[in-house]
Image 1 (cartoon, rainbow, N blue to C red):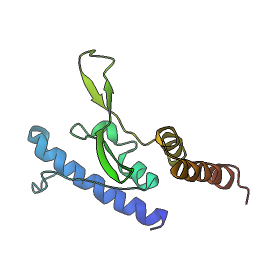
Image 2 (image 1 turned 90 degrees about the vertical axis):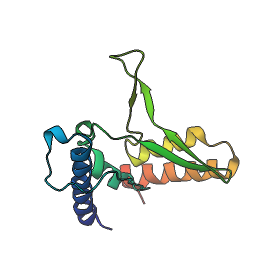
Image 3 (image 1 turned 30 degrees about the vertical axis):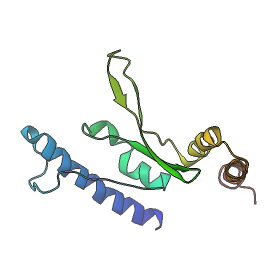
Amino acid sequence: MDSRTLFIVGDQVRKMVEVCRNNADNRNALVKENFIKQIFILTHNAYFHREVTYPHADKYEFVSFYLVRKIDNRSSVRLCDKHNPDEPTARMNINPVKNSYAALWEEYKEVSTAVPLMNAIRRILEYYFLQLCGYD
């Protein structure tokens, strides 16, 4: 999908999230339809993730971000949260994806075996030289 299509699909997903918000907090209904109770959005595309979340994530009161990983043929699901600076005993959900380059560096930090490590390094170098510097 090109960037135009991703934008259109992202807009539709944001509308569905608003319907879910409407169902979670019906005191301030923003959407008249009342048929989506929960939505799961799975993507490996950092650009699409950005279209769906940024700068809208702060409006989503009932959204949780999870990171799904497969390492050594084992899948894991981790809630992305941290301590809330305003309330020391509370935790707050955070968006784990900044951009695809930052995601590659996070992958590099977590990889423990040689082949995936070399793949992460290759992708970091490719992204840096091709996308950021413009070199072939």
